[in-house]
Image 1 (cartoon, rainbow, N blue to C red):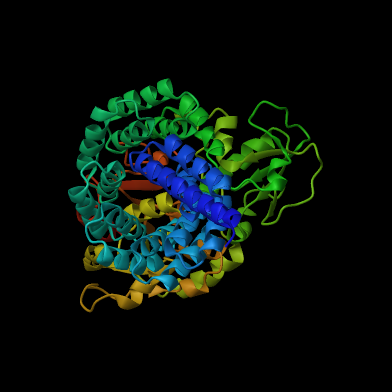
Image 2: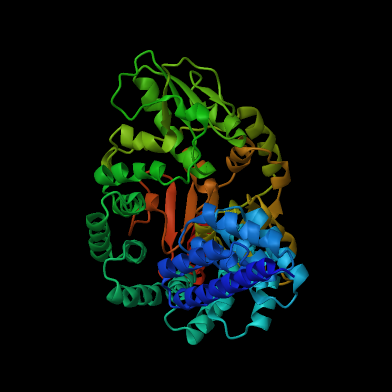
Length: 580
């Protein structure tokens, strides 16, 4: 070897050693959380020795932690090309992709890391994390469980186990996972807050409030926790405390649309419609509601523009029940001289065609002039400046088709005594965590209605649709004391069919689902089983409804406790049966 070559080789060795010294220096800063200093050292190492794999890998890691995702991905992809057999590199590349919301590609990286090293705990953990982010909680749990077996003393693994368990509504197990995470790492704030959220889902509101207040003692101006606490006070009927919290949030963050929306629902629940409806409009700024291109292309109408001779497109925006409740405002729109087009989900079309022959009711977008106006149905109360005393409460405003009513009349005439329809559960929505949690609180298991079966002189008819209908077949022997519940729901293809059957029942007993609104809109007698934190539309401390004159409310007096409610309903039903 020539002296020149030997000198060059020695220079490369010296550069590599200097670079590794900078990497070690950067790694020390990195571990201390001094990310800027670590980044500078890793960059300096690469300038001295461009082939320094550790510098490139760790630079990608620190850039991802600093939020510089695009640059992090460049370095981590290069590191993966240089060392394709390193599970750490593939896992860290997956982390950067996850931070960039490239979840499927992140999963591929984590699984490749596991192919290289089946004992690599972070790859197991992060696979579970991504699957939970994709709401594939049942798939996530085995990965998180294996991560926990490999790293039983890691709070971050237990925390993510809690997230997956919570997503599966396994709340007791989720609470335990968060609690164990906090035993290992008492300062793990997100585990603390998630555990508080589980308490609330379990109906343990007082304990949830105490947890939030404990957190706020350390961070009194945290708007996220203040908003949660405000909502919890509102749910608990503590109006003054809720108002103070909401006002503090809006003082700290005037553009906080979530707080404005939540405050609006709190005000509406107390009948304060003026500001409540205004704040309720903030829902359109939260990004949770569908806003298709066709809808956005139309000019918004919120009550100010003259409607005489104008086309107004009215659209459903949330659940079936919301549409059934607020389609009552079609009549006031027509009274202003408008030509109304009502776009609703297909199962509602036939029933809503009974509103008024002048209304075009459709499940599809229709071609309208460019100057057509648009208003979502749930914005109509705001547009008409509705107040508690001016709710348009004339019923019925919906009618079952006469031919369908006649068909059901023939079948029901053979049943003597009181005929009562039952609905015990709403539609689970696991892809919408907040709505799913609300559904768990509003729904009952069919067996919880068993006290009703002991009422003499009553025939019960199921009006339950969806997954909970299967509970009819799985009722334990002896739970339902009376004659079997009659179930003809397989013959009900839309809401018009349901309305036609329900027209021949003497009473409908339902939890807070679309059936309540169908009954109320058709002026059928309906008893509403309302959860402790009932929807704003049922107001507070009332057993009647200004929206539906034929409705009665039976409210939980304690969270998650249905037994006293059902027993009261059974007593009232017995009295009604005896009078009939």
